[in-house]
Image 1 (cartoon, rainbow, N blue to C red):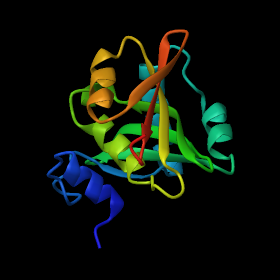
Image 2: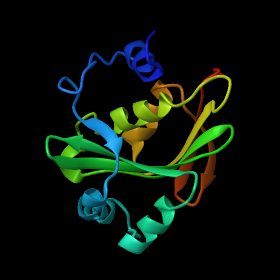
Image 3: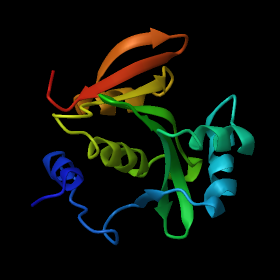
Length: 162
């Protein structure tokens, strides 16, 4: 039986099927990743988190932090919450050295693999309005912009296609 993440990757034209072929490997964050994650956060957001804020976010019962590892470096990270019917991305950032790589797409693909039509069927995330390439990529993958708050757009993807 094909793993849901691999099925999504195959249906969206991603040829990478093994860790060696992929641009990066997405895995759970370890304590040793904290300095690199905080550096990426500081380089990506005007109001970066400190170690205490990241720690508080990841200690919540429904919250998970994953990193995208490229070789021996952390190339990006995502913090998300698991809700009954959706996966809500709290924070997603890619190191400036990897902006042109498929790191963002692989992390979003990993999250899409966690959706199922019968349980969590929605992936929700906020994207700043100055990230036009991300908006276009999300729309091309079936996401819809459904709200605007300040300078960010809320995008939703539904597994059931609605």
